[in-house]
Image (cartoon, rainbow, N blue to C red; front, side, top):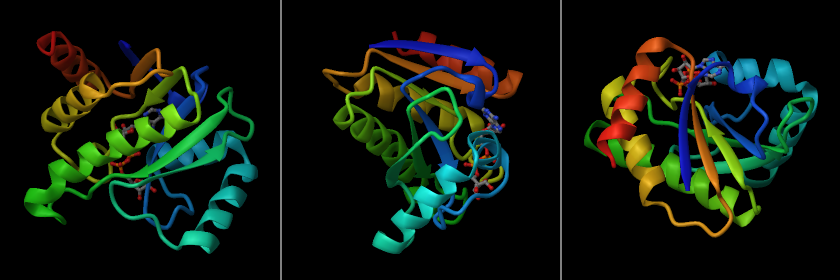
Length: 171
Ligand code: AR6
């Protein structure tokens, strides 16, 4: 599996699936979640509502999928990262679960290229270094017959440097 780190806006990425750092309501919010819903249009929220009505809220660490509306990808995988400090020592495990469950869902859908934002490192205040290490480790460990490329799309330079460093260290 090829792993790339780039700086950019995930809503502009051409991939089979992009991942959204959502909240458990699945009904939108700020940060990357707001950007995805704004750029993708109302279709994504409509599908999120259907999922909400079917299964209720999405637990932290879990992932669900919708189509991508007007975005240049096929799917949006919505995962709920942990709010730093809300889960104490379980935070790292919950963030790992976001990556594992998103990759698993993508693999089941036959996704070849998947793009991740830096889940939980914005509004949810997860320490960036630790989040980067967890993200890279989980992607490295994941075995898939379908996924060929994972792109970490960093919005700021600090995260770009962290993810590049963690990727280098993982070789
Ligand atoms: N493309 C790529 N990355 C982005 C973009 C973008 N367009 N916009 C922001 N980021 P955050 P969280 C980065 O706050 O911490 C929402 O309200 C951002 O710089 O979006 O998981 C949800 O509804 C940061 O590095 O998500 C939840 O309530 C990373 O994406 C809550 O925020 C994640 O920041 C989730 O908080």
